[in-house]
Image (cartoon, rainbow, N blue to C red; front, side, top):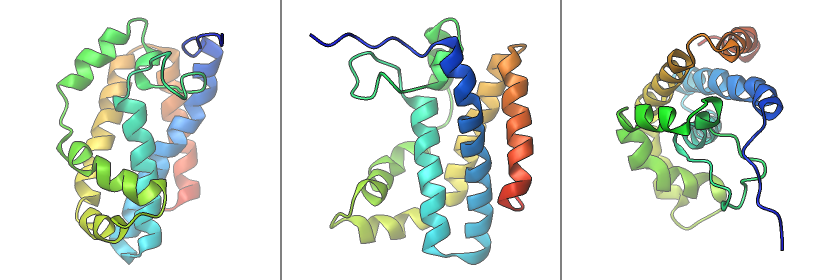
Length: 166
């Protein structure tokens, strides 16, 4: 019988800081680029980062999930998962909820719904960016004095110039 995966360790969480920071900086850069160039390439790049951050902020870590052995969620950064679950429950997620299926169809594989989903998502870039970055700000604020907060902020600041203006 396979063993049940454990939640991420402190070392796992430390290692994931730069990956999460990259996703935040890349989401912001791709939104900026899409706003100026309106190409599908930038839109799809933006959607990829939005999807990854949606999962990071909104998913609950569960040992029974398929990717539990490698997954890292925002709630894992708190001593009590209930702390983040309670906070995120009160945050706006209208765009994140309304675009979930369309984004997943767009990025998962080639589907018959892909063309219409893509068109529908173009109008959502600004609201998705606002919501995801709102979660980011709440996440950082909730971390408070946790040393990882400073690491997150420093990584984002270091990465942003390499991705272009935001």
